[in-house]
Image 1 (cartoon, helix red, strand yellow):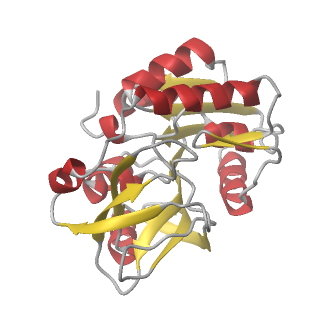
Image 2 (tube, helix red, strand yellow):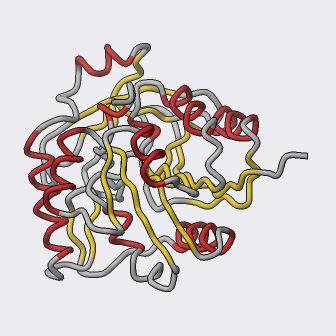
Image 3 (cartoon, helix red, strand yellow):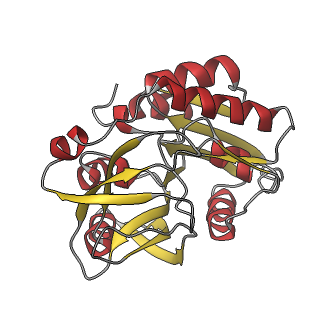
Amino acid sequence: MSRWSHQLSCRLPWRRNAGLHFTGDYTTWEGALKDATGYDSPAILAKTRDAVLKVKRGEAAYERDSVLFDKVEHSFPLLAGLLRGALRQKGELRVLDFGGALGSTYFQCREFLAPVSKLVWCIVEQPAQVACGKSDLESQELRFFSSVEECLAACQPNLLLLSSVLQYLPAPYETLRELVQRRIPHLIIDRTAFLEGGGERLTVQHVPPSIYRASYPAWFLSESKLQGIIQEAGYRLLADFPAADVGSPPGARAHCKGFTYELAARG
């Protein structure tokens, strides 16, 4: 299993008045982790599983981070990036959804992606999520893997999706650098938190009890540093866009946004 994948899958929507908040200004991941309950509670997986299965059975329209909705909240910049990737790859879209939980984004987007001639959505996640996905959700289109290497060998993805995941990794820039070095032709980053004014900050994110009781380390990243890593790997920016999530650490301001990139042709 990849050294980063044990920290995936807990990606809460930052909605106004939802009770979600951030505390601290930590110098190390270990320090933040000591003040948090952690990611791997069986209750989190159980609630997410129940919600996703309701979506699969048609009992709810959409799920995100275990919260059910009666209407799909489409992200049209995300859909545009996915459809562009499919068009550029002769109608075939093979997504590596890194930290994609139990397929929330897949279920969100699948209706708009129905005209794609071939869709394979591959999720790389923690072992417990992968076991649950394989048991309850896996299909010809939706597949689950415990490592990037396993996914690359089985699916040969042509689009890399990083949605609300980098800020929950112990070493987000290092992980990003490793992923973009795979040179997957298309890259979409969505729902990623950035500290305004430059630099980065490590906090603990507290989940509203109405969702479930949990807290875990969460970064506010440097936008310029992230873009520099991607551009150094040979990608060109096609578009950036604001994300719906909101939230800031104490005494600072932050914003959440996304980006669509394409691997530039080598001269």
